Image (cartoon, rainbow, N blue to C red; front, side, top):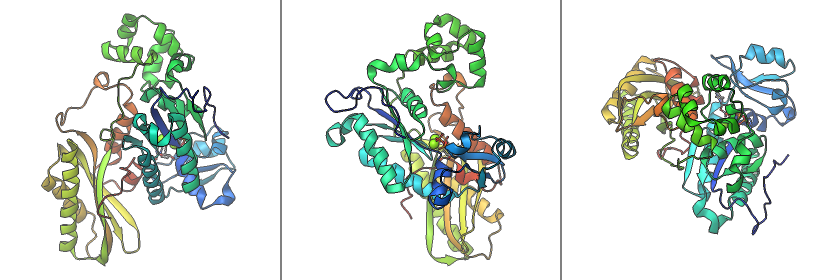
Length: 410
Ligand code: TTP
Ligand code: MG
Ligand code: MG
């Protein structure tokens, strides 16, 4: 299926020219990647899940037809969809595909801001001469991702980030939806309030109490009423969004949720001193990249792949956020010693800094009202990183949105 395009798409009359922001999101990402190597399962309801959390991570659209949704407990998903096949995640493959998809996007413009492992914003304002209008670029991206990865993605094209994000969601699966500059309000206003990025259950309930069901209702609501119910800042933000106003710009540096470096040893090694030196070198790289970006980390993790390819991660939340090599190294080395790899042959080591914050405001956690509205998805990803990376936790770290660029040391 090819999704709807609001507005004619040919050059000349292309109404996407005033809509330079693209949001690209892979369809049923984990499930689709897993199915690439299991083509006999295509068309069947498939769920990726299991592991320690026992929830649905991704479900094919065939499974969703039964009501299966991500984050649902697997037991419930199985009850809703008895014929579904439940398969374990293959994190390494998802990461590799993600890296290649992000590279396709960076072929178009350096202004790519990944938001998670399977989605990114692009600002294509400067790409017109090389690649055409935003709608043409969206088609090009979809065609390349399909041709090169065998996967479908959905793309929203809009004048602003939050509208592009809503548009990609509304066009799923395998869709393209262009919201022309003059069509933002007619697109937004009929949608339910929950479609607004940043409106969670609590905010939705508060809006509901005011009798506000659609985004159009929010736009029509007097600002003071909205602010009394939600607070000054949140009320003003929602009012602005409901009028289609979103000042944020696609910033390639702002959405990184982690920075990592890893290295595959030329020969498998169990030499503890040599491995510690490698951790020191990688910690230095990570710290430098944090400083380059003006960021600090609160969560350091290590990744160790043994000769038999089994891969483990260990993570620690620091007392104080840092961009100092030695502090990152100290945490990484402690994790390494605690993990009990002594004597085992190691194939790959990695260091990751997650739970990032701006160096200027280190330690200052923005309250909801202070956050630029629209970043709640990113905030959630970052919060989740903190939760999942509890001291000594194992495993699901590789599910977190990763920095899509391949570390230079590989
Ligand atoms: P999503 O883009 O939210 O979902 P999706 O790609 O599976 O489906 P859609 O077509 O609706 O975009 O998430 C991308 C991947 O991230 C998803 O395939 C699995 C993973 N993921 C988790 O690991 N944990 C989670 O809680 C969620 C929501 C997703
Ligand atoms: Mg997706
Ligand atoms: Mg996504």
